[in-house]
Image (cartoon, rainbow, N blue to C red; front, top):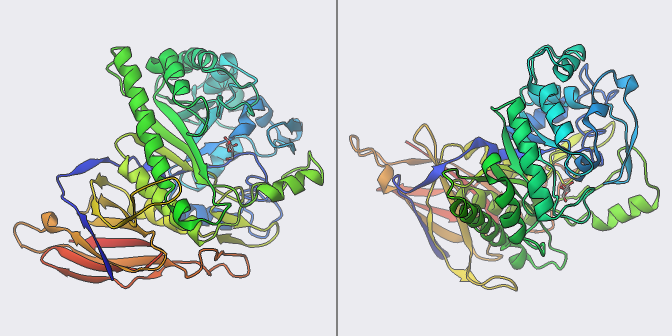
Length: 508
Ligand code: AHR
């Protein structure tokens, strides 16, 4: 068996983990809303038409924030269409996804749904076809107690108390030419600054996310961040990062190394934020919101077919990627990367949550099930709370097309409030199991000399990287009990199977 090690010390801390890094995303796109979270007439729909089986699966993921209502959709969206009596809401052409938006589910309904999931709404405003005025109006509508045009409109629409939305996105992917109302960095930076100012004048307690690049592969990446931040640095709180990965050539080692790109992307954007801070002689630190991340490529061809059969339908089955086992491993490494960067990444959203590039799938009128990527997200969200530790990993490495020195063993560690230590670990090796030594000596109780004990080894493994879950076979890829190992004198020795996601829970 090959060997690797992880050295931990309770004094070597990256930072407190903001629970919002376990956020997700629901866009008015495909069957995310209609046929996903909302399906009146379904046997499991509640009195408001929301599927209770879906709510239960979302609640298990423990998602603190859900970004809404887009995505590309938001850049052509009028928020006023989504409030008031449902029968009076207009049907609109959605030019982002070439479907018809009926507005049956709007702001109030979504806020109700999020509350049922114990989640907060992270609301994106339209800075594509609209601007500061409509942004000001919706903050007044959502958060002002009453006695003004829009707050009174909210009360009339049934919400006496403010919706209290604390986190707002200043548009979506405004650097992308595909975006309605696409802008240059200067144009966007100016409008983001003016919009941010007046939104905060309405409610100073809100936090704002400015659009960074829609991917590190964009030709404007870097320059976009520097230029737009030069305009709006003092009035915003976070910069967004978006990144999707794919494996169209079936190169598993190369695909599993993609989290290194994500790490590089995060470090570069943090450095640009700090460069602008320096240029401005500012005391303020802008942090990062990685508010779209996932694997996205399986459904590309199928989407072209859907549109060929006719545009402008309601809830077309778009972006319905069926995730395989290797996608779950990359999702695990992405979560590890977010933990490594917990000092700068304060918000992150798995894009998306239901049916659309999602961990949860539904059939209209039928069941719902967990895709492979559901599992690492569930584990990280439930066990990855507390303080991110600096895990020093010593592992054999490999080279692939885009990266050199990729460690076979990828790991992060979290110190819980209760003194527990959870190690998340991906073995990228296709063939070899590893004997992983974890140095936990610094966590030994000084009085009793008792060291941490391994309470649980959760393992996600499949011999086939292409294995998927379906409605008929929902448990094909699901967690099992791992082989575990021994802890002796504060040193754990654990077997980590080839191609696997592992959660090692050590308790006092
Ligand atoms: O999540 C799907 C789409 O990906 C979003 O609408 C957009 O922001 C991104 O390009």
